[in-house]
Length: 165
Image 1 (cartoon, rainbow, N blue to C red):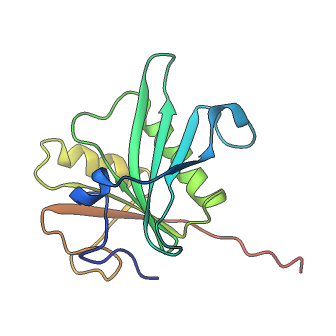
Image 2 (cartoon, helix red, strand yellow; image 1 turned 135 degrees about the vertical axis):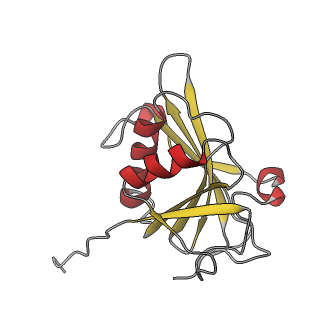
């Protein structure tokens, strides 16, 4: 598995947020189904197949409150940027819905979260994400870009292969 490298779009690169791409809904609130009906997922269409592309997640916490995450999907790895500021109430449930969607619908093998090391709430974030099953990624890991100002944590997703063939 190879993730984004320096020079490719990552959740914390300025190119990610300024990308002018078409969006395609992957899942909307109206679809119902297996996933939480509160989750809406859209992705920017990649310019070239196989290239990293941006995925937007929105989780409806209440009728008036929505948690949002931007991510980059690259080589079956989803890189989720934790937005600056305090996490909204309901973020845990939204993140769990995101993880389930990434595993079941996107067939991702890994979900990486990233946030700036300089955050004042860094210690509680590390504790919260560790409790959810995320593990620290050591600097220099081949799957993450070299960003000394950013912490990465990973959640490996188990992909079940079908033996029915």
